[in-house]
Amino acid sequence: MSFKNESVVAQPRLQPQPDAVPQTREDLVSFVIQGAVEELTNQTDSAEAESKVAPDFGRSDTVELEKSTAHSSIRWPHKKDLLGAEVSVTDYDELTRICVGAARRGESGLVTFLPVHGIVTAALDYAYRYRINAFDVVAPDGQPVRWALNLLHQARLPDRVCGPTMMAHLCSRAAEEGIGVYLYGSTIETLDRLRNNLEDKYPALRIVGVESPPFRDLTPQENQAAVDRINASGAGFVFIGLGCPRQDVFAHFNRNRIKALQLCVGAAFDFHAGNKKIAPLWMQKSGLEWIYRLSQEPSRLWKRYLLTNTAFVLLMTRRLISGR
Image (spheres, rainbow, N blue to C red):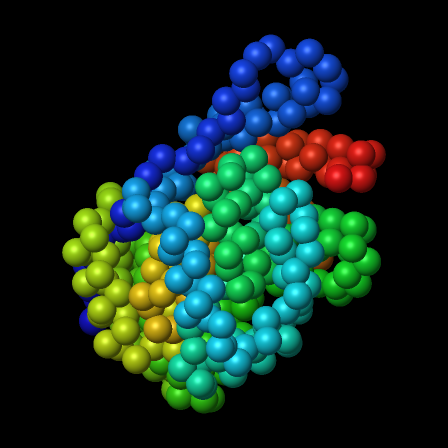
């Protein structure tokens, strides 16, 4: 059974606004990087274009969040700074164990998976970085992110932790444990294929709800109605596939409302629905998955990869040279 609902209430992304023409080489690098990401943001589709929150959502909500989670029994993986984003040092086994344990106890939390694109966006967009750093887990989705953690912090991570693979691990465990899952995002057609594929692969999996929100803002009443449906379903895992940054904004905004573990899994819906092919394992291991994805969607992804990959290299180079 599919539900039709809306997307999240929002407010404009903070964009870099240089006050003057750059005077030094370092200022010029910063100016170029920020301009590249601003241009990238303007070119992405509507699902990824504008990161927004309700006008009254600010520090007071964060204080409420700190109070509400003060007695949580979950021991989340520790984090390390990566260009301003606090990224979790974790692996598939640890994160699966933690998420399943949280769902068993009916505890809520926020989990997202950041590739290079997300790290660069967080580095240059204060509003997005503010939200991301409030997440319980920001997994290193992408080999360059893992490499950077290992280089800067000696994390010794053996592999990345990507959203599609993590979703498969958790669906398998959810089927074994009887944990209900809720699918929020994408189109009705994709959700139908996704649901059929998941139920074929994991026959015991309890999919307790699916929702396809259109690309427009929700009113507070509509957002609350979506939250009520999710909570009434009894889901332990809420997989959110709205694209970056919309999925992270939705999860963060509803942190104290949704009584389940929210997992922002990005393109996992399309991969598991069969809409897109997953890159060969050797390309994933060697950090070349972006080339495979680019070959599938060149018109949509070429500018994103050109600009964000370049910005990531420049930001990392500056970080290594300056030490900050």
